[in-house]
Length: 544
Image (cartoon, rainbow, N blue to C red; front, side, top):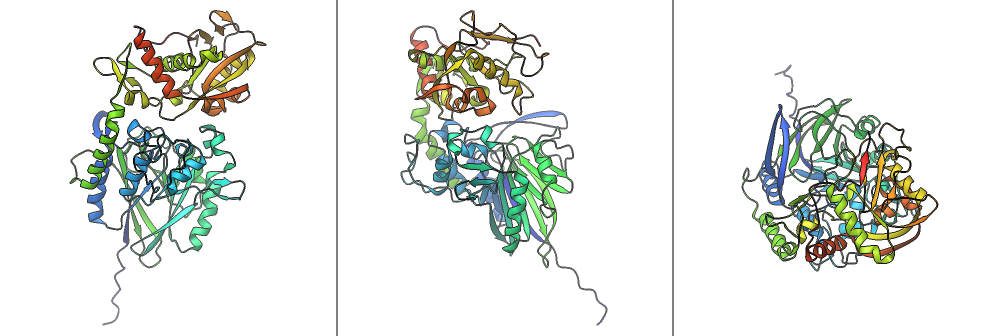
């Protein structure tokens, strides 16, 4: 019979699940979100819950692909960081992750440690942590990607630029990138010899090779993001702002799906016909992404995204992941539960007041000063970004090692250095003239005896009130040399504090900031004057 039209073949359905900014959250935790004006708090995440969800979704599609957008490790809770984050990388491997872009935190411990975490082995500068959970650590089974990180000695990428996966007979090219500003937020010494290039240019360049290798569907995994006031699960949100928007607009038109990270914000937005997603942080939310592909041309026809909160009990348990979590917890319990000291307050918060001062910043700066006074140090500084959590004690006001460790998870060492009074004033001014300094969010916290006042009405670079910078009540002399202490991240000019990098007579004490912190808390308790307060010390004042 002639004239009968052939029914077009149904599109192929590819399923992708994405996670970003996991930060070693092996256990679930509180997730606060607002939908339709109503705020909700739930317990969400954890590798056992993620495992249960993935197990259920793979029963719907055994070729489901699981990917990440960076910061899977670094800035992690004690349960992960005490094992050099090997527990998290092992867990993500067990969960069947295919690939992830590198994030800035993957570079926290330097290029050599990143490569060890990827490929395995025990040769690590963190010998007290590496291979202590598993003496035969074999590395992550998934692939870290970074098209824009170049080894300047070879001209090649440090990590693969892309990975091609096949599902339903379709080749999917995943191209990874990390924010080009990574050097401003990690130790300079750890990334020596690496160049961080423009994200869009590097991704577009990699696309040419991915296409040549037969991929027909392309996905960007990028550790850079944005913000929106819309709900984390608002379909096709339209008010996305931030660096990822300008990057997206410069990408090749074939790059229709961008899985982002870094800003710890949940969204599923449309920008110039592209879909850009992010799944909050910590594994509380996963992005479920459905790709519809033409069965003949193998080209992407449609994308739909649903950000899903991972609440316990919603899916049948994954015994393997539940057992691994219990194993890590049991191995960690004795160390993390060790009492350290009685505190002066149940919670010592990192929340900043209007002047940019926080009780926890006061406490850590004092601990650093105490650890280095014998070396002539007169003033110490702590950076806001280095404090990852509040210091919380139990009902008896006694803090454990685990509660202290989660505050300072980076294994930073303390560096002592000489700075002139003029350099000290300059470093204070740099709190407002750095690239992203549009708020007080990255203020410095000085140790006891060091005080100053700033005026927000004055222009940037001139906000410190003349004559207000004092040490033990005496105005600093711009020509005099002072002995200063800070963590090695700040000492190398991290967070844009270039004046620290210009200091002279530097010496790394090799004292870990966490060790100094724990010793200070214990010594204060023994003296009968427990350290820590719920109020700021009043070392920084503002007239804004």
